[in-house]
Image 1 (cartoon, rainbow, N blue to C red):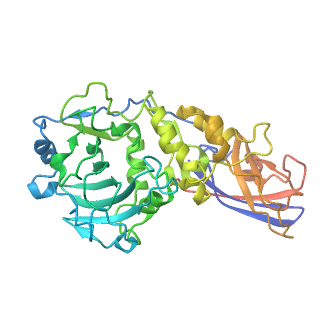
Image 2: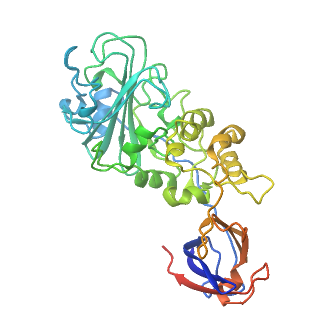
Image 3: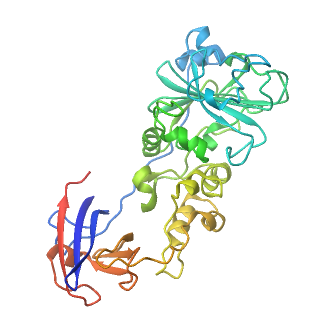
Length: 409
């Protein structure tokens, strides 16, 4: 990969500086006319699960995952009807409330704006570090009062390569006092989920509140782990390894499918790097994670992180369509909300052109779509001209071009 900084002058006027223009394999080391655009794929298989030896009870499974002492399996205290702890709905408790080694790092209302699934329940997300893993406990509940009610209890423990999982779903019961009342991965397929179906790259953040946790760091949620780093590590490894205590029956406990990783769309690669996993369970992943991230309440929509619209193509949504189709998801549905709307009427600045989009067209051409100064229109700039300083662009304007190679990152 080479990074170019290209400076263009049209009719003698400096109209833009393109800093850090990244073109994948767009130029040879010499930057000459034989430069080509190429892509490579990694021949892999999805990471298989691991059935750990002598881990066929919850206590043994927990110990194999680093929770050795009985107190390691404690969940946040329940509290009382007057002063609930695990089910607190006091926003000031987020980032500050600590119980049994767990810190409350996010609180969710029972609303589609906050949750991508089980939206009729409230939820609290708790964190602790133990046994070499980062543990997250998502407690979903009907009532802050710790009485008989419907609750959902999911615990995931992440290390650099693998995930341990505990879960419990079912009819109304008192909230579980500790992890001994949950089920471990591989134990049952009736009372827990196959977490690999949605957590394809480990961490997911389809709503703004979960996205706040993902990017936070120290405040306001006090989550010490920025999720994008481990997300990229899991993606490059074709998924995390799911640790099981017993061999599964119908559940898969494998995140990906296919024989190679997908190439991340350019609009996403700045955060997510170049590798993406095609999910094994497209039904759950596409509907509950990917699509939810881009709907009206989605974390990506709220951040303004959408696929670019290409006004020069008969299918202006083709970038989104190609990537979502490669994932195995419904591109027509997802791309209807995942593509940026047409930009507003541009404001003209006499000397500056803001770049809206840059795309490698072929082995010698980069398309530059301006965000301002519409009189220039999109430009398909030959790489050869940019690199050699040829005085003519494809469209005939006289130009000077300066290119400086930066070392690969």
